[in-house]
Image 1 (cartoon, rainbow, N blue to C red):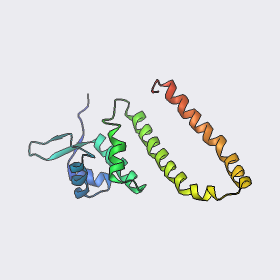
Image 2: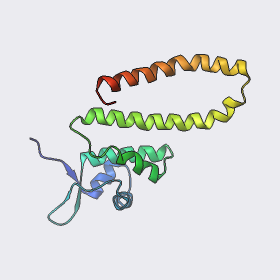
Image 3: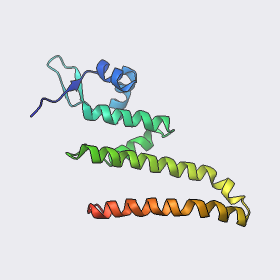
Image 4: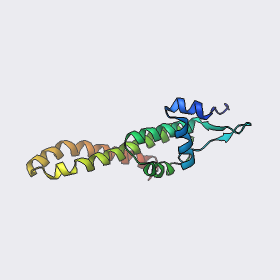
Length: 146
């Protein structure tokens, strides 16, 4: 078994592209947590924390509030042994939430369309959307998740 790679705050901040103060703040909020402390009492963070921190940064860029981020991340907990699948599902969840925001943003425009215009828009949109949702449901059901 390989040794767990751990980062001090300065190293983690460089890898994630955020300031050490941001890491302190996210730690105090409970968004991230150190893996353990060193003999000199330094907080040490894991690769899992680095991945989580990168997700937080991405969600902040996508205009999520810290409360929304905390709620989203709390549902996932620690990354399982199927880290790659978990990462992809998390990214998918983030992307779907962003799409929901975009749909809400264009809802007023869609409601102003004439019936013929709306029908043309939905005629192009719905088959792709339905296929995407159907594929996702098949994958989730196949995995026994739902």
